[in-house]
Image 1 (cartoon, rainbow, N blue to C red):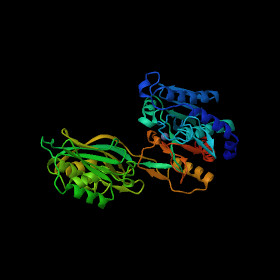
Image 2: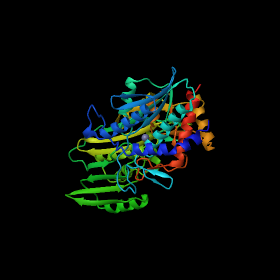
Image 3: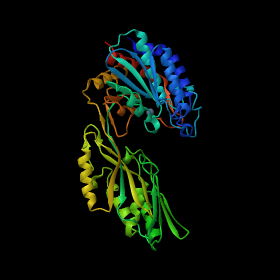
Image 4: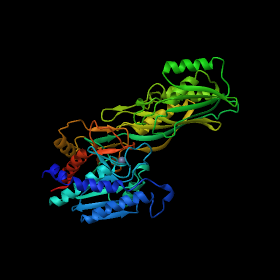
Length: 461
Ligand SMILES: [Zn+2]
């Protein structure tokens, strides 16, 4: 079967359906949410659109509580799952082309969702139709599972898998080629200052970061008193660190701000944490609980990103270093807290490491609580699923890049045995969630061919 040729012949159909899907504004609308439309009208319309396409193609469809659904073909005991989502993040400003149109310019199709995840969904959808129309006999059922809340908490697939069967094997076209087989664990930790600030605390407040999964690019502290040298010290500090900041006086309070550089929590080394920077400066100026707060930030997060000071550091070959990102930090009259997104290696001994950290903390000014913990996700490189998918990918691309690991969570982690498979090709700019999001049409067609052959290989007789 020449899947690439068939995909080329059906390119118009692929683009037309993708444009229709992109024209549905499937952004979460919490205010319009009801039992009938749990994530608002757009996400539900997008799901309905897909299920109608499935029905029209003669496949079995199911809507699960208006949150998710599936399109299924083939027969057999085992189930191959293809996990996609049709919700998108808000558009934001600065688009050159209409975000909900799917305009084609110079071989690219522009629109919100073009690469995350409507384009890949449509490539996989065409692949399913291609396999069906080819007449190949399937010995497994093939099921596209469609979520409508991937971008804001996975409530769609959580509900879906409470009610529906877990696929035997699966892939999610919602990340990178060649394939991601290792995803770190993601824990949300909160460190809290043991002492309550006193009424005459020198540090009045400290605030940085809005989300734990981002490196804070701005931090601000309010201080009751400063010394005569503080202003000069601060200028010197900014210069030494190549940073920007300000020191002003308002209502008898000194306001000190520092700018950093934002980055995703899974790669804290790519950013500059404004909170750590500001804390570093404050340790030379403060006393009392404010000093304890700043000193802890510097000691634990200022020397490396690996949590070495708390013995949380751990590296393994398949997923790399364990990293900690202090993403939301706060100090005020009620206390001090540091919220951290920890991305830990696949073979991490979570319980043991947490116990060790608690022991270190016994002598420190802070306690630690685990708010949430999403376990690592891993399918061995030698597993048949990985081997098959990689071989198919290589055949169509002649690219022999290594399989990938990630510190971010992909959609595949909700599958018992699943990997992320495309459709961003190596070296391509990742424009997901950005203005002028686009997908290369040539890549869309290649991906459809790859997915078709993958389905045929994994589910065919
Ligand atoms: Zn996505």
